[in-house]
Image (tube, rainbow, N blue to C red; front, side, top):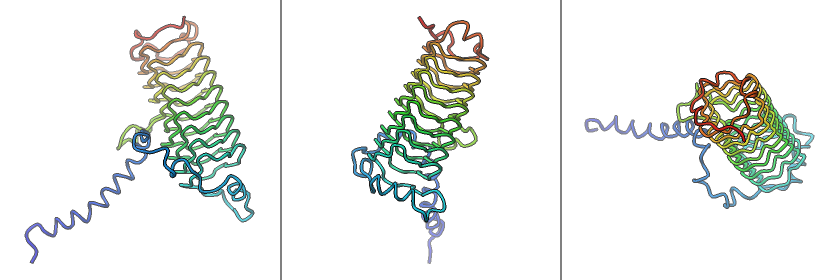
Length: 276
């Protein structure tokens, strides 16, 4: 005969794995923004490829492929995929560390939770791409086009000189933050001369970012983290600085600041600096 409370306890234990799985599903995106301390980037899983670039090229050109090729979870690290057409391809959870994607077409591609550490995406087309929880630390994106892309990935230390992020959305989705703040992390990113017109950078982490001569016209910078960022020569027409943190940020001249919206509502404006 079951003792008092025994059946409920078994029920409890039976439910526990499902509960934990639920937590993992809910938290995987949030945790993916800070995973480097838990992953060995020198392991075969993270640095090797399971197919050659020629084999992938043949797969992408297969006449039997009636829809975009599914490369979810594939190991493609270290390959030279320069100029490849990966438009609208599903690359969710794929490993692309140190992969060369110079001039590649990734427009509309799904790169959610993909690993792209030190990847070279110079001049690549990433328009309308989905970069949710993507790991892109130190990636090269000079001249790349990310217009209209959804970005809540980690691009810390990336280079994005003269890149295009027109209408890109790197903001936090405040309706889906049950397991932590998911937003674009562009800490110490070099965005010199980048075109960010109309980008939604609300709550985006831009600490110590180089935004010299960048075009931030009509940008939503509400609650953005701009501490230590360099905005020398930036175009700020109609950019909204409500609650943006400007601690130690380097601000442009008075003429540029006169075009800003809600600068008086920014945080720590008195601690910002002026360009020499």
